[in-house]
Length: 231
Image (tube, rainbow, N blue to C red):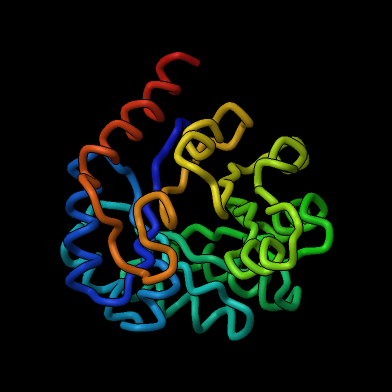
């Protein structure tokens, strides 16, 4: 898979999500993600609004499904999502139902290993269940909690090469990466680069980050897309 840039719209209102999406696409972003905060705040209306505004752009609906796998995948597909996210920590039957819905409805399934005791084994299980992508994910609360307790902050880069080596499907790394780290994930074999909090979104307030975001995103996109041309 060529390098692809996905922006996580971890926002809480549809107007701000649409404004940020327009900005991101002008800068060169390839995929949009209806982030979990947006879905919690606006429901499937957030996904519908993105699909209506951007009819040809891939849209990831990051609902982090834990149960009701078929119904949640169907709702997201009907709203216009092209990709849905199921958690590895869900019951195996839930993962199977999301994968089945993905096949039946023509959408892709991203399996997220957030919270797994063995991240590499979890990634492999997600592939074995039929997920089309693996999201290697160190969670927001996990990172903040460990730092508050005086421990070093874990990074998805710590085991990214192992995860990539364990599966054949494309991998994305998520969770506390700096801009430079996110840009370098293709060097680890993870071609789907995710930009979100704290890169483009204020992680504590769930609003668009301050500063000249479009120029910053354009520089990032140019560097990531150049990786495909150089390799």
